[in-house]
Structure formats: structure tokens, C-alpha cells
Image (cartoon, rainbow, N blue to C red):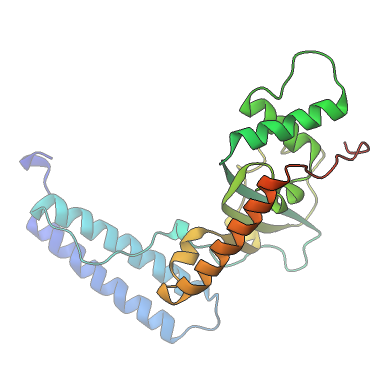
Length: 237
């Protein structure tokens, strides 16, 4: 940033005063809170976060210095629920991430699916993306989640959001962009699974982790010794 565009010392001081005012308002809102999801506390939190961000930017631009604290952004938490009290419809949004940990195991499973279906034409099971298409076309997502190691996959983060609405959506209304118009204030509840939560538990769980690793090694050994997987159901979709 050029010298001409730098904020003045007075602007930085004013931003610092705004942070102090926002701190007082936030504390007052917390002291008067009427419940766990008091909107006044949420609003004061957002004001404090915005004031701190402005001060941090001006401080850096003027003095090449940063603040010693970080206020989490509002995108990291859901706002208070403002949806219908008696919803007539709900949507369940699920995201599960996987890594392709064992490509050969995935390809072998896809080849079994293709052989059982007996379809003519070019084989789709020879590529990873083709194998994934066969796998998710044959098994329900919940079954894949429970058998992911068998299919050569490794679990990553996952989340489930339940949102409420006044009326059900019209057929085909959101199929082109199913996740773009989610209102965070309509989320009734959410459930997150991530390895970061395990990291926060601490070193006291090392012994338990060692036991879990030994159990996984035994299971993997059993799988390697017997590669026969569960027979496919001919009636599956």
C-alpha cells in the first residue's frame, strides 16, 4: 500500500475506540441474555467481530502490526433459528468426503458390479471415476459409509444439516443447484464429524488410539487373507 493510501493515526485510534465500545456492548448483551440463542448477543458478537476486523486491518496498514487475538468469523457458527415454529416440510443436507485410499480395491469392486450386471459395451470399471459411478449407482450412500474400507475409501469430514420450511418444494425445483439456497437461519440442527475434533481430545487418549490401530490392523489382515466380498444383490437398483 502506498503512503498516500495509508490510514491516518487518528483513524486507527478511532477504530480502537470502536472495538472498546463493541466490547462493552457485547458484555452488556451477555449479562442480559434471555436464553442460549438470544439474538441481542448474536448481534453484539457480529458487531464486535466487525469492529475488531476493521481495527486489525487499519493497524496493519498504518503500523505493519497485528492484534494478538482472533475473533472467529460469523461463517463458523449458525445464527439463531428464525424458521417456522411448526414446519410443514424439512430438508436434510448431507456431505461426506472420502479419499481413494486403495484404488485397486475400488476397481476390483467395480469390476464385480459390472460382471454381475452383465452389461455389454465399453467397461466403465477401468477408471477411478467410472468405478466410483458404478459403486454409488449400486449401493446406498449409508451402506458405502459403513463399508468404505471394503471399497478402498477413507473417510474425511462429514456434516448433516436439517432445515425447516413452511411448505415442501415443488418437484424438480432445486435439483440443478441443491445446496445453493440454504438459509442458515432455517437450520434446526446440524451434526459434524471431523478429525480435528479427535485432535482436540489430547494425549490422554493415546492408549485408546493404539488399541484402535491394533484392531484396524487385525481387520485389514483378515480382509487381505479373504478378499471375497459380500455377494451382490441382483435386485438392487
